[in-house]
Image 1 (cartoon, rainbow, N blue to C red):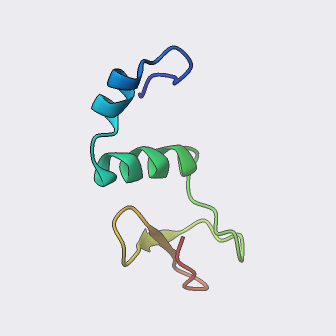
Image 2 (image 1 turned 180 degrees about the horizontal axis):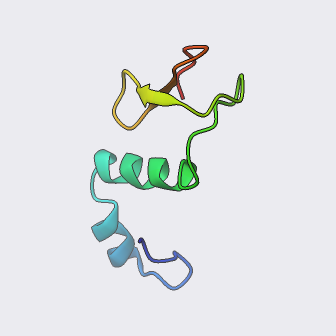
Length: 64
């Protein structure tokens, strides 16, 4: 689990998010922490999307 940002110094922030991949990994973890729900159709099953850390709805094929 990532620390909160409120008391984090710039150096600590840079250490945790030093690459684009680290940022995307954190964001996807936060977005789907309670499971995937498609924003378009509400379906709860997904597969990997075309881009790193993206998900694709298995019903309507929308990529998030």
